[in-house]
Length: 526
Image (cartoon, rainbow, N blue to C red; front, side):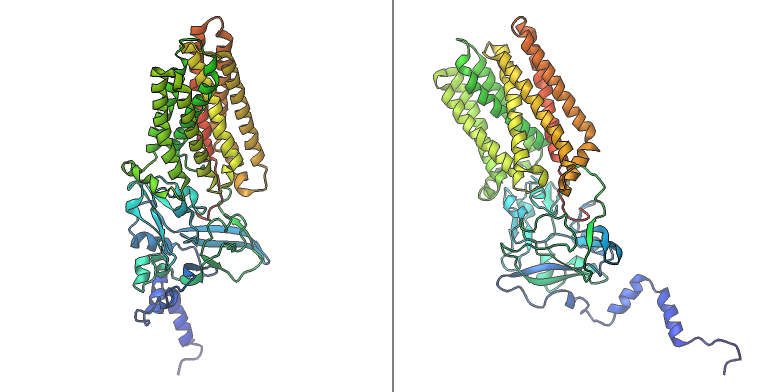
């Protein structure tokens, strides 16, 4: 018997005290110690998908604690490079019936029924397994164009600069085939991530990907398969990082290619318009076509700097059935060739030069339409059809008139003064509309567009001011050249050359902003 007044520890107290000393690893090990390799059987389906079904990630939001064990497991098992992630953990904040709510969200590839990455890829570097529905990236096929990073509404594909290719989650398809769970599924200590067999979303289905979160890409675009589940109702959530304004990737080689090719098309257009007014024996037409060819060649050369593996660019024709980028590449190559042919015709058989220029212009216009569609089909709000087509066509008008005026002043062509005036007016109108648009989108109720407006008013404001300043300088110089042309043609040509340079730089900055101001909703954590 114990002495009077001496407390005897009860067994329950001793066990509780011991439990409090266990680390998370100890507790995890004790739970799984007696399962004899069966620890993860309940996290993957026992049967393969049937007709009209596929594998999908199922995420229990109530069980996710944001520990990022899934991120670490994915990184380790797949041998990812430093800074490369295929799975992310984001944070949602908001309110519910019982007060403020904070929710962590783990996300990876959604293995969509109509994957944007697959349809947009110009080299067919993606495949959707017909039996499992898993979307797999073919690393050896990839040329590193990064277009899939734009066509995926959820920002899933990740560009690996060291390899020069894009990579992404494949649901550890090899492990699943062997009856083993994917790395993230096995790594989650709470079992928040499992693999389920689901019915493939049909064309009429609108998956409600994250309950309570309105600022997400339209599920009808790609029809994602991931199932996010929670037992909490009446939530109103937004991304916790929504107030962090981070400019999107610049894609400057693409910006240079777009502006230079559009300048080239504008030059060919005005070549056809002003040639009937050229003086006899003028070299203005060869000068205009030579400038157009130089601009197109520089633009196409700049675009190769955007490829991680430019030596494999010849594969771009493979995706012509579905990819607007394939179509653009297949049109712009012959466009440059047709310009060289038109220049040769203008020099040696000038009577057929207009027909050759018209053929080149037709290819250039088709290429321009492809360029617009490349960004429109991404469904990103800032790259709307009107904004994209207006800016691209505006660049062709501004730079085409300025280049044609310069050629007229240097080579004795016609219409230098009206061309300079038209170019100045077009540049002034274009930059004014851009500034007004930046102010307008900041006040819109569409969150993605409002973020674009806040980017332009915040982190990107110095670049927007630079764009406006360069355009203003180009307009003033163009008008000065127009005023000097009748009396001082040589000086006017020099001033017009500087005006062209200023306007070209202004358009390059505008296209840089076109990319960096894009702020689509994406997924929390990306």
